[in-house]
Length: 135
Image (cartoon, rainbow, N blue to C red; front, side, top):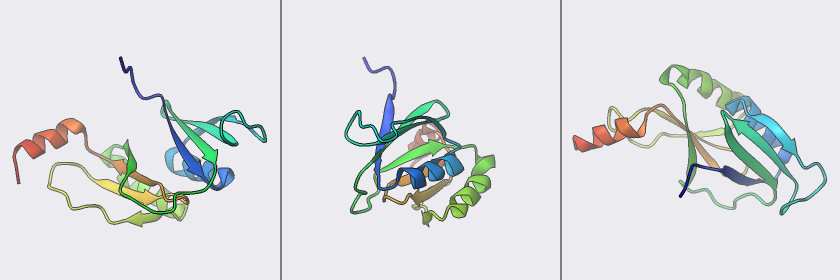
C-alpha cells in the first residue's frame, strides 16, 4: 500500500546555486549535505519544504525542457509574494497555460537545470468541480 510521497530527486549542475534557489523561493530548509562524500550516485543535499523531502544531486542538467513539472500549492493571497521571489532569483517565468475560470492561478518557472516548477492556488476538488460543468 502506498502511504504517501517519500521524496523528489532533481539532478542539478551546481548544488550551491540550486540551494539558494530552493531557499529563496520555497523557504526550503537544508537538513543534510554529503559534502565531498558520495553515498548514492553523486554529492547530494536534502531539503524540507513544508515537510516534503527534496533531494538535489550533482550531475548533468536536463538537455531539453518539457511540460513535466512539480507543482506546489500556495494560497492565492501569496501569489504576488512568490512571483516576486521568483523574479528576484532570476528564474525564467513562462506564460501560464490557458485556463477556464475557477481552476486557480499558476506561476510556471524553470530552475537553472531545466526543471519546470509550478506554484498553484487551486485544489484538485475545485478543478474537478469546474471541469464537471464543461466548457
